[in-house]
Length: 508
Image 1 (cartoon, rainbow, N blue to C red):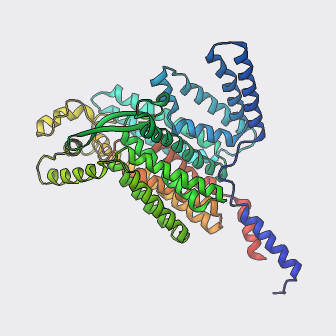
Image 2 (tube, rainbow, N blue to C red):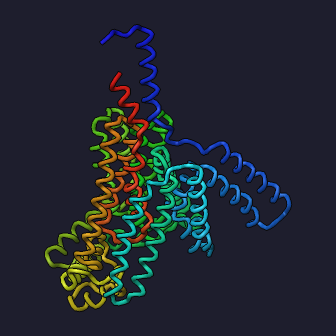
Image 3 (tube, helix red, strand yellow):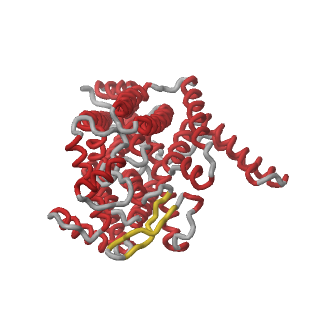
């Protein structure tokens, strides 16, 4: 091969640096100038209406209109805005806490308009094909259980609710036309979790849980350990364990930003977000949440095993020390009581921890239902109506009301049987395989930033699957967001232009 001259070497080095830097895109990229302009104009309109003395709710109208224009006009702004709204459960919060039930419908219409606008503008939309086919088949399997369920109407209503969530998620994926937009969605999830966690920490430190921050920081007094009750935050949800679950999903995404931030400022942002989210997770007193966080961190550590430096280890030790200091009192007591009760229940006794004993009764009831209806189950969402009669017949703990299984896997087996569990397992296998396939493809292409985001998404899925051992299907928008986005990743990652560049460099 002919030796290159010094100017040619410099030119090749600059070309390679440009190609490498093109893959380290800005993880916190701001919306377009057009979006910022319409938001600024909306702010000026609000100020003008304020001076005119109109009612307070009228002040939100021009801002909402300008925000809608910004969302339709800018794909990046739309992805960030929709992701934050969905992840903070804003539609349900406004409906339950303020009686405003129109946001969900307006959100769906706005997503349809935005997706249509960007499709007509020439943006890709083929990434929705696989998620749409997968959720259609899976939803059909859920609705089919109405044929033999005790209450067919209830089954169809719940299946319809899941279909609406899937439709909204597919519309969001239609806006994610590149890996750069996917990266923005990951950052938006971290921002949403950081906002919720900050409200929880402010509650704990300053308000004593007396303020729910417009319904985005709900808390209630629940059992903690032994005979002690205490405040447990639920964020924008109604259950602290599910709140812990959505924080577990966001935690590896924040940690990945810290480990592989494009700049020092983004790395600091990831570190601060990780500490805030982990602190709020500890405040929930969720044992399953902490185990789920451990599972997601192990997966993230394995993915980044060649990238972890001494600096990262020092930060981890420091963050762990801060976490131990910030850990609420009686947290370890709650863990010890749970382990003690679990041993007692496993040997046929009655545990002293009411939560563990109750969960054990619900799990045993689910096992008995599986034994009686092994092939098809009792129908989607129908287990809770069987709990009372099964618990009485089997001498289990009386809970005084219909109860869920508190385990997603036993819930699927008891309600949909072996046939339904095969559908569920196939969906999970396709989800994990999509992440692994995309991660391998991006690593071969040396697209480092995109591979980092996909690896963190896989760790988030691992955290969700781990926490689902102790939680039933509650807030379906979060698992569907994880699953359908993962199924779209192989299509999003495919970049023939970049492959041509790689082949050209290989020939050179």
